[in-house]
Length: 119
Ligand SMILES: Cc1cc2nc3c(=O)[nH]c(=O)nc-3n(C[C@H](O)[C@H](O)[C@H](O)COP(=O)(O)O)c2cc1C
Image 1: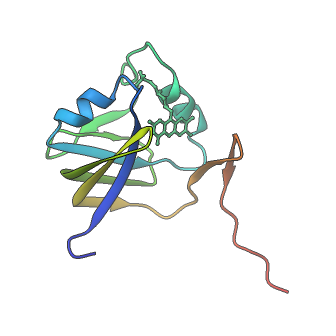
Image 2: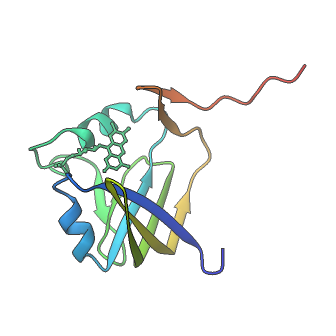
């Protein structure tokens, strides 16, 4: 937390990797549970992902998505090659968030987070 850091992991085979390697800043958007279509769109290859969607540049120029549960503007601090991914550490310069449930992805499908039931 001192300083606040966040990490992303980018596949060495991803075309976006070269942009992250050169960027001084990057944005992280935590999608809300109703944004599955947006996640699917950003996982597709060969299209302009930002064309026609609700986004705006933050103070540092990074893309921030409308309707996201949380948005972080980060300054790139360190990159660590690790297996087939590059781990990129960013210092969070600005964060904004709303109440709600995040969109989750595990076991090859989308989920939402529910409070655990207590006996
Ligand atoms: C839910 C979800 C999460 C993903 N997370 C990552 C990730 O953390 N790092 C990564 O490199 N690829 C991740 N991917 C795969 C990328 O979306 C995919 O490799 C990328 O779209 C490749 O496009 P590009 O080669 O044009 O960059 C994820 C895909 C999905 C569906």
